[in-house]
Image 1: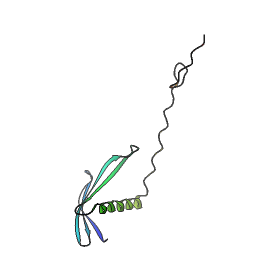
Image 2: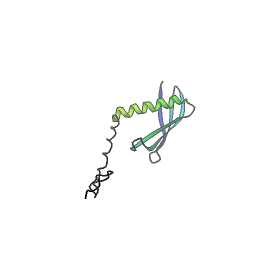
Image 3: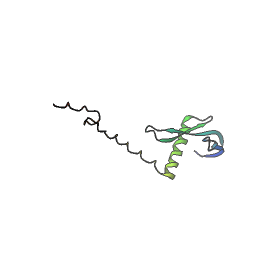
Image 4: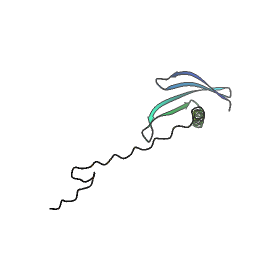
Amino acid sequence: MNESIKIVEKDPEAGYVLFELRDDKKTFQGQMELVRVKDDEERRATRVLVKLVDRPSYMEEGLLERLGDKLREELGDPPAPPPPPPPPPREDRKDGAEGGEKAPPEKK
């Protein structure tokens, strides 16, 4: 495949790029959108959506794969997720029992 991409318009504030993909003497319109999301661990992340007009979806997937490869090559692998937070400390109760436990009855 002999392809090249020309950026036609971009808006960093809105998170989109319009481009032309030239593939074997034909030009196709495309768009890329960057959307802020949270991942499964509630960390900030970015989802990239690509649409190529009049091209099969596997070409969009290939473009995303190549973009991911390029980002990893230039920036390295993403950082590992942070460790989960430690459980909250158990609070001592006034009656001498620790959190969630009942104090034994007092003997007279």
